[in-house]
Image 1 (cartoon, rainbow, N blue to C red):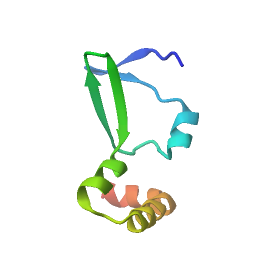
Image 2: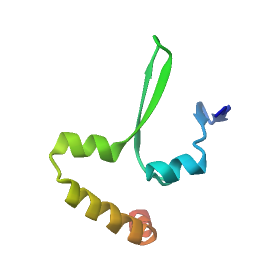
Image 3: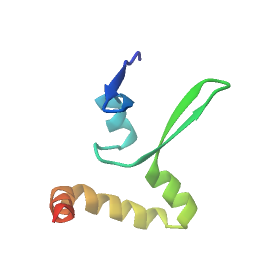
Length: 83
């Protein structure tokens, strides 16, 4: 899929199509790690939840429970974060 690099303040952005977000289980506001290589030229976007699970020893069951909680209560958690 061809995407355009957009100007965002002093940075640049490439949008992620909604079907990709859905297929990967990502939502707007989720954190991701971005990696780039020069040879071969490649940009990777890695959901942080996969990185955290590997690095922290968190069980998949616990991580899934936390993800479900966040999905269900995201608006409330965002409001609490603003206070």
